[in-house]
Amino acid sequence: MLSVIIPAYNEDKTIRTAAETISGILSRESVDYEIVFVDDGSSDGTWKEIVSAAADIDGIRGLHFSRNFGKEAAMFAGLSDVKGDCAVVIDCDLQHPPEKIVEMYRLWEQGYQVVEGIKEDRGTESAAHRFAANSFYKLISGATGMDMSSSSDFKLLDRKVVDTLNSMPEKNMFFRALSFWVGFERAEVKYDVQERKAGQSKWSTKALIKYALNNIGSFSTAPIKLITVLGLIMMIVSVIFGAISLVQKFMGQAADGFTTVNILLLFSSSIIMVSLGIIGFYVSRIYEEIKGRPRYIISDRTGDKNG
Ligand code: UDP
Ligand code: MG
Image (tube, protein in one colour):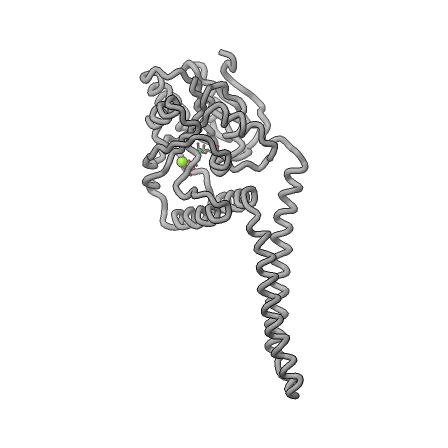
């Protein structure tokens, strides 16, 4: 059986369409499926829509978060709840073309264990958004050594991969990178990003920055290593300036050089501050993990898990 996981946050306008389109395509192709909507603590009628879709259409069920935990949490809740032999994660707004699920499924039948959706055309994103997304992917690809520039959350995972992800104890998971990191037999399916069917994108600039920082933090220790590099640079700079000062002293020109002192002082103290900040960032992440709180809280469910 194929499980389809759909994270949904304030998507009351798109639930019905997504449910009907995806279940329609899969039944036409006679793929045995279940569709699991994860309502990420929406404040609109999303949960009502999910309940009614689950009542009307076979093979649909829903999980309801007690509050908004974010898309990553919603995807992982889906992964730990589904029963299929493979699972697909897809957006609720149908920006990921649902016909591609079938293509992914066929590749899985041929023995591939991870089928990545690769964005060919990013659709109608603003130039600023594109620039931000590109920089983020450059950063994270460089920091993690994995090329993720055109990857997305649209993926099919084999049961083995799903179980592997479910068994990971870390709380702050970055789905895109983790599904890359685990390895396994991989294949790719290219797709064009579609227009959003209804409603608006849920990502504010602030949310995106937080998302980027979080994921860099959970996948890379490069920033904290950078501190050592900065320290080394400072050491070299101080050796040079130290030598210059000594020479000046012996030549009797020691009174000069306040500018140098000022620059050095400002430079080194700013580096120390930044370094402390970076260390603090990682310490806070350790603190978050060590608390061991659940990634999400499910407050309600609909549809029969064993049906
Ligand atoms: N989403 C979610 N929780 C959030 C934000 C978004 O579950 O906190 C879901 C949303 O309902 C959609 C998917 O993640 O199914 C992608 O969101 P969106 O379309 O807003 O992002 P974009 O396509 O603009 O990147
Ligand atoms: Mg979208």
